[in-house]
Length: 87
Image (cartoon, rainbow, N blue to C red; front, side, top):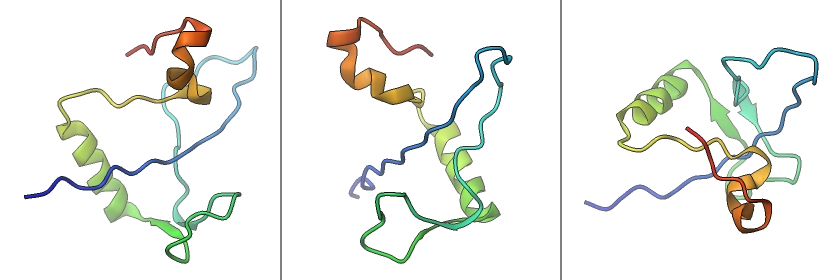
């Protein structure tokens, strides 16, 4: 059995300096959506509904490894910024 393809999604949001850090984050919109750069190129739009969201949540919970939330791609720049990702 082959492994499923790795899929990547990007997200950007701002937290005000004087605000408390949130304990949850809404990562994807409900319904069809596209990136501002024109992606996806291979279909009309990405789609999220309750059934798809439940499947994503279950698959993430079943993973042996933590899921990295890569703020501003800092995990790709650790050699230059000295930061390591945190759990």
